[in-house]
Amino acid sequence: MNASRFSKLEARPSYADEVYQALLDAISDGSLAPGTRLTQEEIAEQMNVSRSPVLQALQLLRKDGFVQDAPGRGVLVAPLDADWTSKLYEVRGALDSLAARLAAQRCFRMDRALLDNGRTTSASSSIKAMIDADMQFHLAIYRASGNPLIEESARLHWAHLRRVMGAVLMVSGQRHAIWDEHAAIADAIAAGSVARAAELTEQHAEHARERLVARLRIVLGETGSSV
Amino acid sequence: MNASRFSKLEARPSYADEVYQALLDAISDGSLAPGTRLTQEEIAEQMNVSRSPVLQALQLLRKDGFVQDAPGRGVLVAPLDADWTSKLYEVRGALDSLAARLAAQRCFRMDRALLDNGRTTSASSSIKAMIDADMQFHLAIYRASGNPLIEESARLHWAHLRRVMGAVLMVSGQRHAIWDEHAAIADAIAAGSVARAAELTEQHAEHARERLVARLRIVLGETGSSV
DNA sequence: ATACTGTGTTCTGTATTCAGAATGTAGACT
DNA sequence: AGTCTACATTCTGAATACAGAACACAGTAT
Image (cartoon, rainbow over all chains, first blue to last red; front, side, top):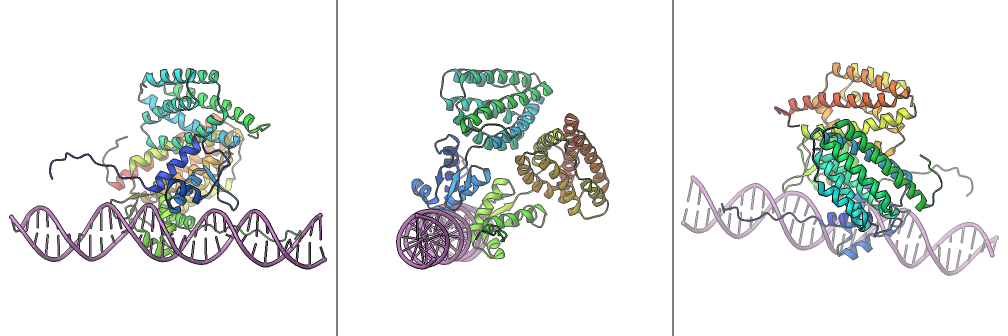
């Protein structure tokens, strides 16, 4: 068997991984609402597996902060928390800024389609498409940074943010402002302006944080900020 | 039962958590050398539990990058990797810088004992004590930042770094330079000099990165840098 | 009526069993 | 001798079985 004519078939992901992904998706896109009670048996039955892989998946999700231990009765899809989200944005801002700096050092030229696509989706399409375009833009920068750890962390952050974004239903006017900022960031990176790219990115994260957290507080019926 | 005379007994951590911690400690402090093969049965027997909690613990550790899937035969304690470590330091630097900025905004006055303690340990004591003092210094800043997510991420980073630090056996001269930098950072934070604290911290992380990664490459017998 | 206690139900985490995949080894064949 | 195949071994991940903790409810005593 010298002729390597056969394509490698990728290893089947374990059930535990699949359950993890399925739950993560459902939680991120809001189809599992914050506060929902989950039991291992329920999930196991619905996905046609035993409780073992479900248990493992839930442990992973707990570590990531997507579910909490409910008092005694199963686990809870983590409720939305404005303070926590605000702090998550702080971390994300630092990471985004780092990624922008690194990408600018390489004068990364982003595919303009990402920007164009973002603008068009922000005008018309669904919330989901808007969030997705947003994420794709930032993911491109993470990848361009050459540091895979950034994307790894950011993926988790974005899963959390998707949840919040979906819940607060940003209006398209705000979305437009976002893509102006995106364009400026892309230009700075392509021009190799390291400091400027970092600064714009930090401001962008800060703006996004303010917009999002303020709206989240309204949705949650919170009165003031404790942070 | 109105008199609350009884101290709450804390919930017993699950076996899975305990196995996770025990393995994490052993890997971080080097008693489980990089490249060591681990089997679930071995661990289970040594810790007097069944394979179930061990499996869960290993999944967690795999997600954190402390172990890898060995080809077909068990898992492997992750080998040290200079490039990867370098990138980890990039992320840590960004987070440290953020923490320093936030701590400086609050003019956090650090307990001088941490600094004094660091200097004395760097002169005489064991490697372990030196690393510990280093970590305690940075942990204090993370806590002072008021953003618990920073400490959460950083704990993982430090577990990785402890491994590397232990492996390269820094000489005490370098250690001394570190505590000069620490003192300067603490001063800047206490003075509320946000920008300066951030800058010093970033430089500190960069220095530490260069020192550590260079030594690691020597230990690993690598020739050049691909980053 | 109210407060307390005992019991049933529910759900988790751990142990145990089971089935499948990968490696190593011995033997057969050229 | 070298190579291929069949089998034994080893190890994992999933399924099942088991024991203990937490809540809910009912019944009893005051």
